[in-house]
Figure 1 (cartoon, rainbow, N blue to C red):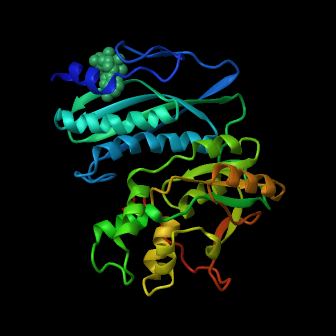
Figure 2 (cartoon, rainbow, N blue to C red):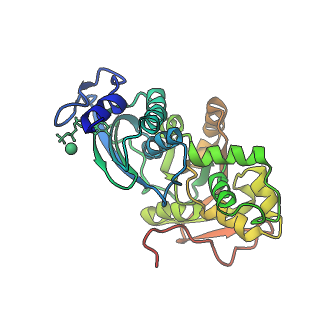
Amino acid sequence: MNEFELIRRFFNRPPADGTVRLGVGDDAAVVTVTPGHELLLAIDTMVEGRHFFADVSPAALGHKILAVNLSDMAAMGAVPRWALLSGSLPDNDPDWLAAFGDGLFALAARYGVSLVGGDTVRGARSFTLAIAGEAPIGSALTRANAQPNDDVWVSGTLGDAALALAAMQHPATQYRIEIEPATLTALRKRLEMPEPRVALGLKLRGLAHAALDISDGLIGDLGHILNASGVGAEIELARVPCHPALKALLNSADRASALHCLLAGGDDYELCFTASPVARAALADLSRGLMLPLTRIGVITTQPGLIVFDEQRQPLPTLPAAYNHFLE
Ligand code: ADP
Ligand code: MG
């Protein structure tokens, strides 16, 4: 199977809708943009050994390389539409590629995203996916507009993926609490097959003042909103929503690990956003409608900086640091 057969067999599937005038197979894709809309563009790379284990399920990996990009579209309040995939592959194993494609295209179909092109090379396993989405002109949600006295909200639960990763990297006695196998399976699903909050992002247009997706931990990512908006925040640890297993760890001798997972763990792919207190009722309705927890965890302050209050309303003296690729 040569490069072109491989592309045809595994990456050339019919587009999701009529916006794709020309997809896989030419020098560039041609798509029709909705009048009155802006394009939103994002890209993410996943490298074996850094972002996934060599033995990860290929279907999960296909899901995740798209999911992380959909999460960026969600954070901006954009409708995801077209994707380009660049794959570096050590071999042309058809079973592996078929499973990867199935994971990718299943998620793409659910969100009406078309894979319109890409590039395929031989090398160490890594994937880069670029996505384009649309939003009505001027409606995109950014990090820059958080306002003093806004509530700070997060979707879902935080720290699940980081807890799964920690448990997988250090099995057995890493934690002084037991993580039951069924719990670990659920947490692992959050790590390997995250669900992008696209529907939430779209509904937050006009409701949220600032938004982003949490991919590198709450503290670091909320910090981006604070910096971009020139404000600060106060967060209550007890309000930050988490899985019961993480809650138990928080109250155990291994509290430091739990704090790290909850506040600085990667791969949450939940949305963090700020909104006026006036929006509380609308957000409660939205949470019910989407069947997705939305939790108010704190408030935006005029004073720059981030303070996290513990269960006794004492500020945490040090905040766990986020993952950083080029941190020495
Ligand atoms: P070119 O040499 O013109 O850049 P390629 O020979 O690399 O084109 O690719 C042939 C066609 O297949 C192009 O339309 C390209 O967008 C598409 N393509 C290549 N790799 C992938 C992939 N992994 N997924 C989807 N489309 C791909
Ligand atoms: Mg090429």
